[in-house]
View 1 (cartoon, rainbow, N blue to C red):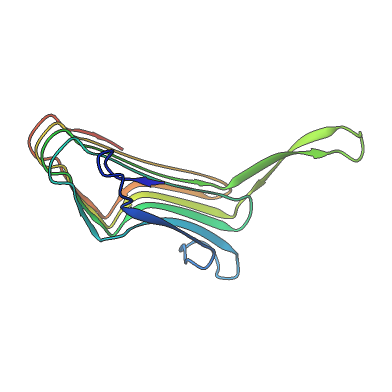
View 2: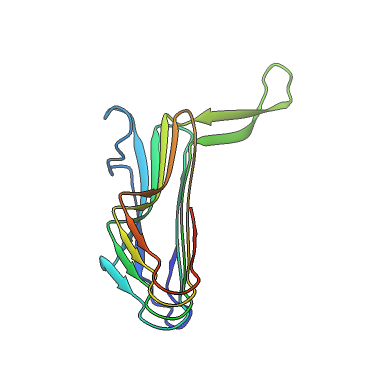
Length: 168
């Protein structure tokens, strides 16, 4: 999900879900599912006003390799005033369901785990919170047989002036 400022309601990114995206996980023979949020422009500059930017990438599967990427290869500049950026990436590699038990005739809880799961919140990007009391929250969560979650990877964050908050 990608939403821009409540003032503009202009989408600033699009979601790309494709099993052909290389996730960098496991052997090439294993199926891979990846979700990446792509900014429609490589740079987003909100300049002024109290802006709220929300990026959420989530993918789930009980088989193969999966990965979710929040904001990758982008520049975010919030400008002045109190702005908030929330970025999250979740790769749920555990699928669970109730299945019929042929022996007892009842039901039992069953889980399957994906081979590897990777979640990266902010990667290869730059964030400049500018002036004002700003908030940046980045989260990454992964589950499965071989989970890896990385909040911020190969990125820079400039907090600028004001009472800023950074949560990873």
